Length: 469
Image (cartoon, rainbow, N blue to C red; front, side, top):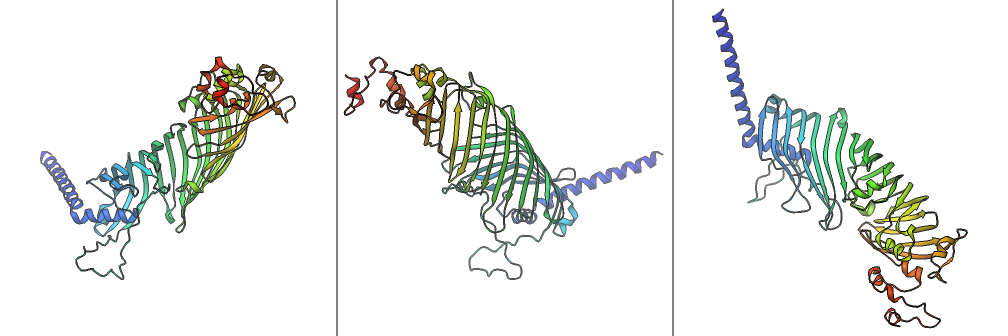
């Protein structure tokens, strides 16, 4: 019995030694310059772009692991478009000897994408394609030139892929941060005819520091140049967003996408707080729908539109209007308690067009329309309408500049909102009072105790002259 046990142990020891020798041999084979070149060129041929791999290790349980994988950035020399610390490939070894790469699964761990706009404000996603030399007619050698390296004739078969904890940054042509995606994971399956289907989830999305959708879930299918992402659900400001997304990538011509979405029960205070605003005193929820379409790599092609509305909302208007409310003692300009609030909008020509904005409280109505450029510059035209109660409170200011409104019992005055969304400016106080205050309300407040008298008929004195009378 002991002799039999020794034989068994000897066989096991021999198998272990053979396994170790095999692993060492496989790793030496995979680490050889020729095979490294084959793997790298096969990867480049599949992706159509140069690839850098720092280290390669093989184990039976983990397959082939490529460390320090990176793709160069096409927009900035010396920078990387994609970086991934670990890229694992589970494959059958022996077909590799016959230049067949039979992959059961690939796993990409913690990849990071940095996508930048070029000088023409277009998103550049991939470097120029690598041209594969023809086998039938190899290119003629140029005297003194480096020999042409022919990509290996690998037949690649792939069944499953996995992505873990991916992230991405989006940067405009001026180097400004536009957004970030983090905690992205996905799993997919490849079927006959190069069809890919699977599911994905994203833990956090940051859109310019203003919007923060979280816990996104979706399913996707890619087939013959058409990517469909369906059943998109995510949380946003204590509410929900549902969407459908498709993008077509034809062999010739630019890609095109379409996004349709609905939002419901989004908390206004949470939305303001996540955008780093002051949510004090605000309340209500937001709902609506919108659609966006165009070339995802070219902002000038974007188009679409939608409509949003507020339910039981209290809002603080931007600072300039709040200061006007303080100066005129109109509480409703400091905190808008809205019975009706809606906005219809359109996106075209690199602008967000406000088609119809209506904010209606108990005693006043504010309407507006006009363009907001993608860079934040505004040029909105508005109407400030007040009922008889507010007219009595503003009787010392209201004159001929207020005219009857189509709304029964209201009078109105037109005004503009310019500047940028981060620092809006308005001439509303000028229009309400009938005096030229200028763009700086703060400068006017310094002269409150020297209020100019209302000008009489004839030439209007300059502001400095009027203030000195």
